[in-house]
Image (tube, rainbow, N blue to C red; front, top):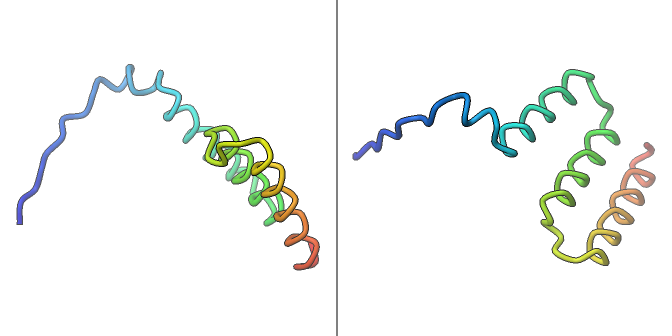
Length: 75
C-alpha cells in the first residue's frame, strides 16, 4: 500500500480560507446544541451558500420539501 504525505500549508494562510471559516461556523453552530429542525435548516443554508442547488428554483423547492418533511415528522 502506498501512502502519500501532504505537507500542510502555513496554518495562518489556511485560517484565511473561506473553507476554514465555513467549517468554523459549523463548529460554532453545533456548540449551540441545535434541534433537528435547526440543524436541517443549517444544512440547507450551507448547500444554498455553496450553490449546490445551482438554480434558485431548485433551492426553493428543496427548502419547501425540507419544511414539509419536518412538519410530517412532527417538528
